[in-house]
Image (cartoon, rainbow, N blue to C red):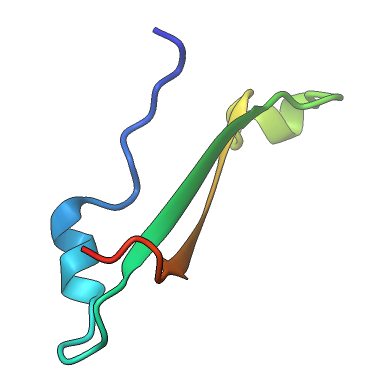
Length: 68
């Protein structure tokens, strides 16, 4: 329902990426999932690429104001 996707990052994977000894600060993770509907939907392309195609992107930013 509502095309909810599982997150790219789990709590464990984020904790594994943190550097030991780094100053205490929070991080902000933004994930974007977009269903791209092909405009032409050419048959020789849709054989290999699904329609709609799910595009996923993310960014990770430090946030010093959100200290844990």
